[in-house]
Structures are given as C-alpha cells and as structure tokens.
Image 1 (cartoon, each protein chain N blue to C red):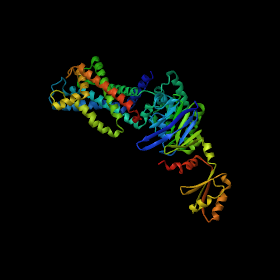
Image 2: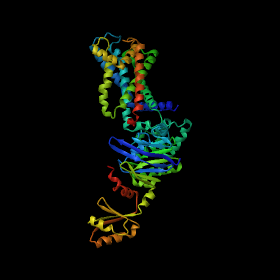
Image 3: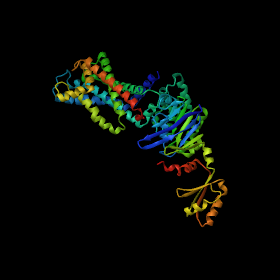
Image 4: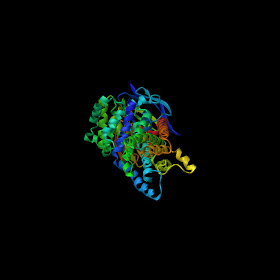
Length: 314
Length: 254
C-alpha cells in the first residue's frame, strides 16, 4: 500500500460551523506526517474522524484499506491513539495499563509478555512501571500513553498534540522517541501539532490546516524552499510609505505587513540588509530594527494564511 | 474469544479500583452498620414492632443489605461519567471490542464489588442476632448478584445520558433515594395507602428486598420464586437496554 490513509472530501459540520471542510489527504505508508495548524483549525476533529470517534458529515476515508464508516472495528484494530488530553486511570499501574490495552486489542496471550517488554524498553519507565500512575510526571504519563498505543503493533499511530504542555526537555525526549519509533518499527505516525519546530523536526510531510481547510501539503524542506526566500523583518517609522517604495526594489520577491512589522521576502538576505537600511535612509525613513531570518515553517504558515500560528484560528 | 477477554479485562479493572480505594470498602461496611445499630435500635425502641422475632433491627437487616447494594451499584455505574471526563472511557471505546461487551464487563465488575459488600454484611448478621447458615449465605449471594447487576445496568444507563457529575444530586434525589425508600427496606409494605402501595410495587428493589427477607428471615410478602423472577426480568431488561444505548450513543459517549 502506497498510502496508508486516504481521505476524500472528508467534512465535519457541527450545526452551522464547519470544523473540517472537504479535506483530501494522502498519507504515505511508514512516514511521519504532520497536520499543522493553530488551535481550533480542525486538527483534532480531523484525527477523531480517522480514529472513528466522530462520524464525518460527508466524504469518506480509508485507514489501512478499511473504510472508517463501514468498517470501524477493523480501523480500530489497525490504529493506536494518543489523545490530546490524558486518558489514564490514576489508580492503576503503568504495567496494568499496558496489560489491559493488550487484552482489549486482542494481542495473543503468548505474545503479550514479549510486547510488554519491548514497549517498556522503549518508554523507559524503569521501576516506576509498577507504581500507580498518579505518581508519574507529565512526561512519564505521555510516554506511557505512547507505549500503550504501540503495544498491539498498530499500522498507524495517531498522536494528537503529543508534547502539549510538556517542558522543553521532556519535549525533546518525546521527539527522539518518535523518531526512533519511526525508524525501528513499521508504523506510520500521523500527528497534529501547533508547534512549528516540532513539525519541522519530526515530519516527513506536513499539511497546513487552517479553518478546516488544508492549505498546502509537502515536506518541510520543500515548503520552505518554495518560499524561495529569507525573511527580513523590519520596523520603520513610516510603514506605509516604506511598503510602497520598497515594492519597486528589484530583489524584493514579496513584501507585506504583519503585526505592524514589514516582512520582506528576498533571496540571499545576508547581502541585502545593508542595502535595505541605506534605501530607507535615502527616503528619510527611520529604521527601528531589522532582523534577518532564514525561512521556517512559521513563515510558510504566515505566507499562506496572513497571520502567525500563535494568533489562533478564529 | 476476544469479546470474553474484553469483558474480563473491564471486570478486572472495576475490581482493582474497588479494592484499591480502601475508604470505599470501609464506608461500605460502616454505613450499613450505622443504620442497623443506631437507626434500627433507635426506631426499634420507639415503636412496637411485632412483625419478626428480634424486632425492628432484624426486620431492616435485609433492607439495609439491599440499600448498600443499591448505592454501590448505581453510583459505580454512574461513575462512567468520571471515566468520560478523564478521557478513560474514550480509550476503552476506541478499542476493537463490541459495545455490549464493555457494558457487560462493567456491570459484572460492579455487581462483583456489590456482592463482596453484601457478603461482608451477611457475615455480620450476628449483630442483629441472626444465625447465618451456608444455605442462607449462598441463596442470598445469588439474589444480591442478580439485583446488583440490574442496578449497575440502571446506573450505566443513567450515565450514558448524563454529561457531567453536576447531575449527581439530581440522580440521588430523584432516582436512588426513591428506590431505597420505596423498597420496603425500612417498613413493611403491607397496609400502606394505595398510592404508596403502587409506587412500592413499581420499585424493582422491593422484590430484591422481599426475596432477601424470604431467605434470611423466612418471611415475605411475595413467594420467593416470584420475587426472584421479577428481579431477573428487571436485570435482563436493564443490562440489555444499557448495552443497546451504549451502542447507539457511542459517538456521543466518546
């Protein structure tokens, strides 16, 4: 199978509000695929439909070759899910969570011990695994949930905001873990995130979603390359005038205002910073600050949506 | 096979939870003892009660067992709401296991915990001066298991229509307390005004308490087989209905 997940015009409406609007995605087998977008963009709704938690209003999708509406049970057997919110029972131990999950997903009894050891090796809970979950740190809980999602060897692992609310150090370790997972196991990872860095670092391919629509989808490096540009962010006293004048400069690929800053897309920005400052001075425009950035996914997002991801969806 | 294992897994979790919350076990024994010793002795001294040998305290003993089962079973069923709020229900519902299996596992788990409480109370029968025999013990266990399965089903049914624990007080006032008070746990159901009589006979727990009274005190309003038949019917109805509703409402529950 070339694509482990395919969606066709999948749509979810809640009364008048369209959370996911005719989304078409093709997710290559054994890739790490990211759905990137601000809060409220429809990421969780999309993933919930693929996990059979929500029924699409219309459109369809297949996961591991099974239709999510017609064969929900087969879909469920093919996937592992780590929800955005915690789904653990405080009064059970880590090991009990894993055993319970293995039983619910019908892992054959003779394989269970082996799988459990495998997973424990991966999530490195140490002796904590036999303690109640209520004594775990946030990162340990997350690792347990990811491990649990893997114990039945799913074809697809869904991770909904896997590092939300975790400290930077734990986040790094979860990232390493996901990378290792994708290299060592035959599993496709579909994750949602609103952290640019996370998508950039982990994903083979990224779909940018905004207000229920997929705006673009490609590998992070292609998305960035497509911008063909470094970004020069400049703050000046006469923004309007500067914007008008700078448009005519030959090296400017694109120029627009965002958050009272002016962003100029150029190639090889390193050489152009002095030129731009000189240009502003010639026209008696005072430069408050100027900054050069090589493109990142934030810029890709900005280019396609006209705002930064932190500003929220709606 | 996987279905049976799913039922077992959910049953096991329910029992682990029960055993680990030690305060729950303690209260489940202390509360009925308070009823028997304080309420039973107190009211027993105030009224002349010629119904049973041993007096009022002895009379309400089967009723208090019924009450304990009622509170445990219904509230454990309703606790699915908490599972839902903590996201744990979602984890179970996205597993490739049928919805009825989830309901059966849960209901069996709850009735097992209710049974444990009931058995402890049966062993404490000397408090009210009743001689416990193997026969009474085993027969009572069967009735306790039956009625608690039905009440667990009722609790699950309520939970599947309730979004948050804010409805908890409503459930207490409008469902659990009426079932308890109308069951005849605290008073004989003969010689009541007819409006109350009707309500009493609409209460499924009435038949459970009457059956327990028939077994433990050898005195009852209805013949034992009839009470047991009605309880069984109630239980089958409740468990099947909640299994059906869980299947139907699975999207809302997740």
